[in-house]
Length: 295
Image (cartoon, rainbow, N blue to C red):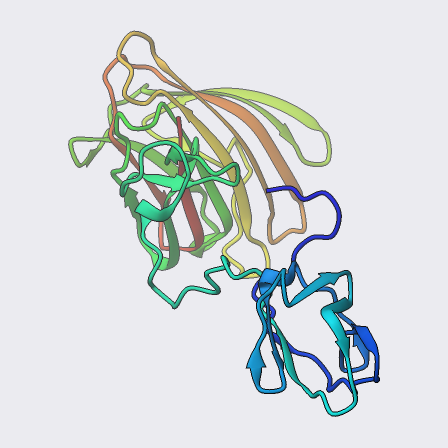
């Protein structure tokens, strides 16, 4: 709650410094560590005078840091102690693991499927739109197959990081259906824009998607000449249209040619696919392969 004037001291229990009685004086300044202190009210104090506990309001009053006794004190009187209680309604700090959900004032449904937000309301947990489904560190692998397409995600992103192939060979991708690669001829139709030392474009049809090969362009098998590619796969479970895929690939071959390809692959069938395989034309591949689901 808000307060007008001084904010109350919460749970700060203090014993005031000793006070010497002055003959014929009723008002005294209260201090703790030689610093003036102001109790919340007379009801927040325990005061002992001459060994007798005083009644707040009638035996003494308080204003700011000044305590005033009902009558003047005289030589021989002793203020035994003045203890300030702070806010006596304060419950203090609860022990660990003692606050239950029932004690919270938050609104909303409190259960295993919700979380407490900063505005003190419970909200349902929602899954992110972009989720990592698989991360594979291929090491001299002949093939990496991922059967992870499902109705949970509409589209997918495939990231190939620093892929190298033995035998200076090119990298290939095939889609999978019912746990097997789709190898039908003319299913993978590409339209590519290739940049090396000059621009060139090309089209081809094949029984697989050759990620970084068009005519003479090959992927080096040397470890310091890796290729990387970002591939978007649109609606692989759809059956109303042929599936379109886009990708961008970059690599440097063993002749020091730096090559990039931007292109699109049309999977020329209206049958859904459930995964894909990444593999070289021959030998093995090494590098990181990540697949993300996109809602």
